Length: 563
Image (tube, rainbow, N blue to C red; front, side):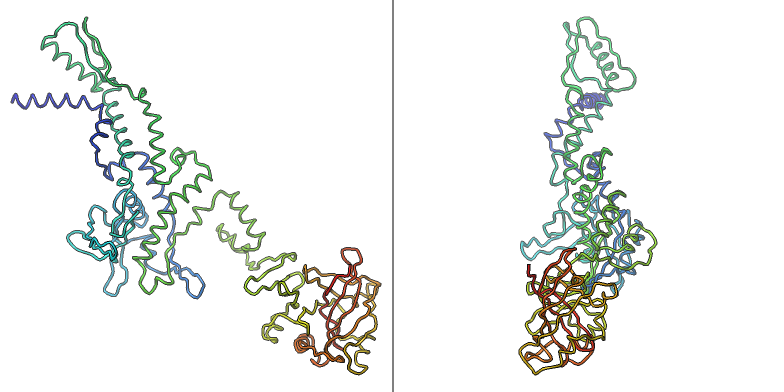
């Protein structure tokens, strides 16, 4: 019995030396487990923040067929992750378990339960420690099998979410890659725990001038034990001739509080989590950085694992899983509304699309607003469309045509362009009186023998409101701007240089006949010189247009500014 009592006393003496746990643990190199790591507040907080964020995001399945992406909303596999997994865990709980295993173990594993036809009937989460990996150890043609509960499974039977995997079915945890910093954090907590147990008293030793008897020694040891046991007796009386000397510093002297902040910040960096997220002082910008640096890499790993393990082979080329991250990245109301304003102003979102994102009822407004000052370029064809003038122009050549209506395009085989014999764009739409009326110059078009050109009478531009019918829209092809002739001026030196009455064939006459009427053989391409109202000032230009007797003049455009 004496032997056991002596052993108990020795154990008590060793327990009193636990104040050096921090230093001794570092020397020994204690191994860290998932449970130990989760006792570190910074680790637990980082894992919790990331897991909670991901668990709050709904998973979607999308189909990308024929260049069109649509959501598949009736697939049971999505329901197993967003809701009931078929296991004892809910979808949210399974996602949180995935995140913890992803960071702190060799990986997250979930068994895919299927029937004989390959239909998924449930997703069953398996603890990482219950799964062992049997790999073939080949450097190129790698392969492995998973062993669980005495059975062997092929890789495609499990969802495997692995961190920094080398292709052998297992990942590398933060604990494995960063054991030292986690060990420091854990043992710092253990050290503080021992200080609390000892009531915060300093560690030291007693010095006596005279030799003490065994009875005195036993009494001092018992009193010292009570002092450090934090049981309420925190006073000890030393006899004359005895003195206490410190053998270690207090936690304040070791600056543990400052070191804890430094250690916590380092741990947060391992997860990509800004330290302000732990203190509750995170701004919107910090929250965005947290989502981009800490959450998105895990989301990408989960999505890749689901695409690999949960999709059928015939689906992998056109289907994919993706978390709906819009809610997480919406930002505050002012940031969202500013973004919507930019989207609406630049016409790449519709009003009802914005209302849908804000969970508001649609107004039924399904239009995209186009400013009349916009010019649209098709980079593939090099063609420019100007909504203000309803004109299509070939970039770099100055050639093009006024945009046709849907019916006209159908009649013309879908061709937007109209060119003259010289390949130049042939005009702009007249305002008002380009209808069936005729004038003296049109009458003269039918007279005379064929020549290179046909001279025409000057065309007067009236001054009165009623004379507006004799004015025309003239487009500047270089800018897409539209002007009119100055009132009271004339279009002078007009002459037909292609079409009826000339020796030059008007190759686009068929299109104009289809567009405005008449026979192709009667259409003419004309040029003349006129004065345009250029923002309140007169400006002379060479102007071209097309015309046909009985069907008016059409599609005027500036060939060249003369000043």
